[in-house]
Image 1 (tube, rainbow, N blue to C red):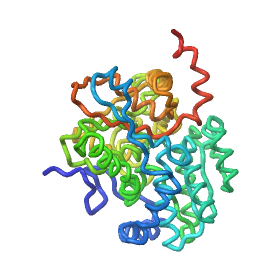
Image 2: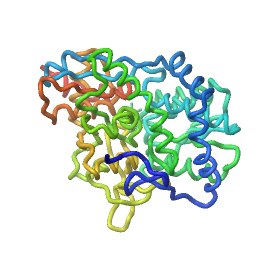
Image 3: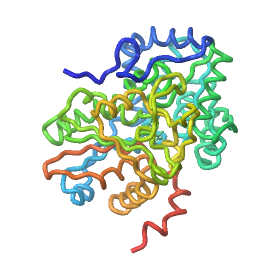
Image 4: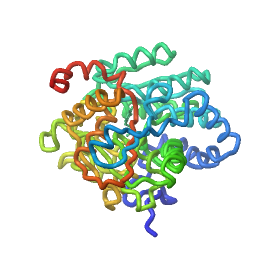
Length: 398
Ligand SMILES: *Cc1c(COP(=O)(O)O)cnc(C)c1O
């Protein structure tokens, strides 16, 4: 059987691995040696699942959307990660990694954030566990995600506004990595997605895999079978998608559909469609598809959605795309906005702009009447209201 899992060297096919400065070698090696033992330990599992249940509010519902089902002529379920505490799937990973950091004896937590959801999630867990927390965020994102910046500060974390490059997620990640190099011993770096040097992509995927574990159980209850025909998720770095597909990676009855950010369109130069446009390269400590020019310089990504505005992609997803295990759509800003207003007006659910890209993919697909589709709504749209209001005239007119 073909396997799409990670191999023992930290690669998914041609992608992944560990490409880091010497100074971080010991830290990453320590993490690589201990992460599986710690997260598979019974007492860790018990504490993690108790917090997921009582603090996050899991399991998140699997909701049958009658409106979307009717429109697309199949059965469409929404996996409601938007209902988690702090409003997105990011909290699953943040709890797992901060618990792990504590078990490794670390005192101080570093994080990068784009839309601010990972920053809020990490600051939340640090408040809960009494850990010092520093969040790196590009200045552009600080300005477009004001509510999340205020939350991070109220939670007691320090926000460092990064002014290099495009002043977005890529630049925040560079600075966070640099800071980690300066404090390699007492500090733990919580990466917010399935990116970074091995073992981060695998560790984050495992911590998020609670999503597909629940989908299996919930589909069995609601449909009498534990797998869907399609799984659909948006991809920034790939963590909500990785969590949604984790237990179905090698089950080819399940078709995987990933939605990346097309921005203004993949031909326009204003885009974050990494899988469509990227070439193999190294970014943030791992090998993947990277949006780069002929000299290997990273091309600044653009998306209306801060959470998808990243010039790389998780190595698991680059491999799934290369091996054609996943179908990847680039969903443009206007297609995502349209889908967001549609879900809001028909189901009363305001999705995050990121999740709206997954919803936008539905409009590019054809389904059979007995198809069962599970689409992950990675987060809620509270943080995006200013953006939505700016466009509401264009998308709500009769
Ligand atoms: C961060 C974020 C994303 C993108 O990150 P992934 O790691 O690709 O999941 C998607 N949706 C929401 C709501 C987010 O906050």
